Image 1: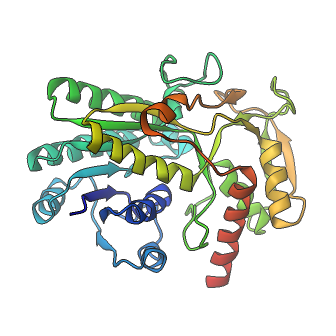
Image 2: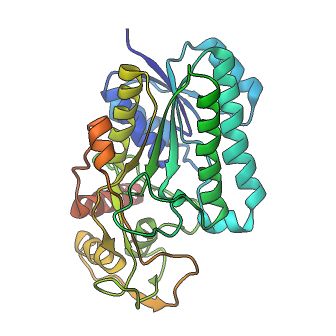
Length: 337
């Protein structure tokens, strides 16, 4: 009998791709999402990709009564928790909303899980917990800090999990520190679709390529990097989704928690990403250099060795595939609208 997984935020960008990966791996999956940052068309797209009817509950992860009812209705073996606010800039403007959603939601979820006797959890964390890195590549043992309220919520979320696991050995939690997920599913039916002006680099470039935004602002051209622009570890969202499957597999296999980076270990600059996307869409994309943003490190990329050792994880999709899959998704969206 296949194991049943609750996916909070499962209609969002990373959640929807992980849903597909879990179904393909033989898991049964139930989605919980309030559609605060997810498109209504996603469940239908997931059914089209997988051929499996989607079981969906439209509730907020802060709604304890709704969570209790869902746990009472379904015998879950584990939860993968994506439901959170994630825009760094917005978190600076609305820190209390981020604390309430990201930390209150985690506590409420874990309380409901414990009440239902479910103690396997995969937690969506972030490389933001490293703040400005002291050395590269970044291992899991690097000093932890934060540069904004979003990063703070991920750091405290990890601490909440650690304290809970220390108090109750029944808990097994996989903490996955993402670097920069990009790209889209090969079908072109799901991808990153921010409702407002994007906070992240690739969806912003995609909107420039689609003619929705006039040009890309490149923050800083004087970093100590090969071309002067910031360097980041971009990972294809389908590789990231596979990492969640491997994390669940490890929890069920070993009964032990883990904290690992999910990245490629390869840094690409802003101009390298812009050049690769220009090639994917077939034209040079306009950009302008603007002053650095406070708190942005010159470079940040993962040491992914522990994820390979513990989970058997290795990213396989390169920068070209990241960009071509994103452009395919953008064109599919345009054709549907």
